[in-house]
Image (cartoon, rainbow, N blue to C red; front, side, top):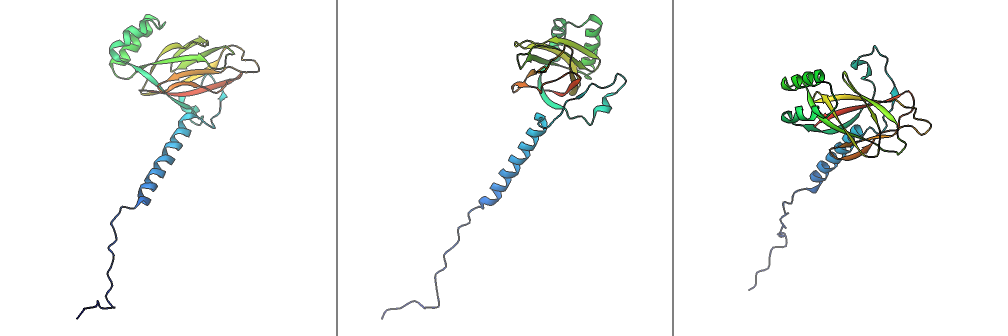
Length: 195
């Protein structure tokens, strides 16, 4: 006698409990979208150069202006006096900046500036009450700037940029970055982040 299995009974295959790749794909997609949006925001794509603000204007008045975010190298507080000594600041300015660093109100950043287009030109770089005039060359010139954790730096052409304009560039923590070309009457706003 042979026993035949009951036709009503069918063996059920157990489903494997594999994790769904849909959830992982959604997380990766959301992360990529977030990073791409942050990259567009901080790279200044779609930004504009605005006219030079009036002499009586304040920092709050240019809040509608889109600024380009750049990350610069932080100078250690113990090396601040040495960096300031070779930066061209007067003794009073050096003393005021060092006092701000001791109070932890200010930080020093190194901002290498160069000519990105080969057209040359002269620009004034303003950071708070500090103004530096630089003749742009293909070789980066390091400026030492006192800022808070994130400071606003404005770049204004001094020499006549002509038809081609003045194309400055900065060396950030991620490498050289060409800034938008400036023409007569333009001002380029940067948000410098000390890293």
